[in-house]
Length: 408
Image 1 (spheres, rainbow, N blue to C red):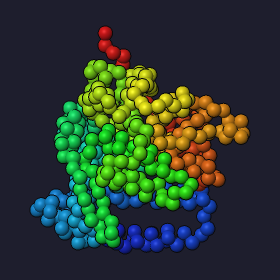
Image 2 (cartoon, rainbow, N blue to C red; image 1 turned 180 degrees about the horizontal axis):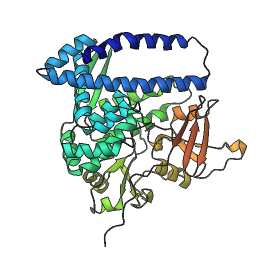
Image 3 (spheres, helix red, strand yellow; image 1 turned 90 degrees about the horizontal axis):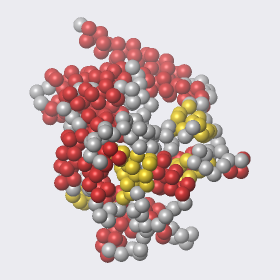
Image 4 (tube, one colour; image 1 turned 90 degrees about the vertical axis):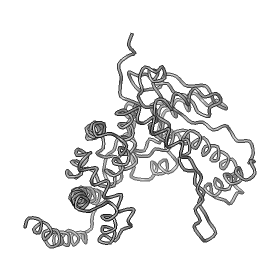
């Protein structure tokens, strides 16, 4: 009887409330009011998605098999069977393995899609390890976009089971392959699947450098087109000029390097990698990466590896090492692709020093200078106020949590 009442409320009364809310949108809103409205709606959607996740998990329990359940769900919700399978898996994982993340959904603080990224990042963990990660993430997910949430979950998972991460890394790298997907209309996708991340990032950086070198004022092709043409030329002919050597940054603390712990390292733009892989990478002769050693007590850089093609200005180099990624919250484009910018404009007395300079990808550099956006530097952090009045802080986050000194 209670179940029928719940369905009745959702089908009837909830629809009436939604109609009344929609009617209210006919009024003219200020940008600030519209932002508040969107935040309020999003919170309610998260709560509804928690109810939906519970219903999905219950439905999955009642089905004879996952395939059977996905087939029926796909028909009922008019989605693909792959999506149905994924949503069923995430819902059951949230209910049984990640109850605190599910609690954030019920509180209207995290959406189902974001929670699903956490499910994917922790799917390989044991029951005990995933509960440890669940507890850690309870205070770290709110306000994160799906990509940032996934990275936070990956790091927590790597900390919870470093040996498991090393095994998973070896297995995935063994599955590397190249796939050709024909799309019609004279185009196809050439995909490198499960390629070693340090080589894939270095290859992309080389392609990007070569494409930018070709982008003269008389070149009609866009950068994306140039990257595609350069990559195919390199594969087909092995030529394309003499590009600068690609650089990839890997950050690890010296206790990890010395094998005194197995805490995860970080590959710029990619996220956490296992300690064993990081040690292998920095020890490889002729590697295409730069090793950044951090102080365990602070998580900030203390040494810059000197394996590189050509030097840069000291301040420029320090800022790219310090920031690691674009300083716009939620953007993970590596800082070595960034455009450095004064938070206080040079024309208004801004100084060219590490306190006032921060790196942004091209997209967010443009947004920073769009009217209505405000960026203020505060002790290494950047406080960003949007035109709608919402306030966000881009923190100078250390590679890892402060750690005790090395044992004697």
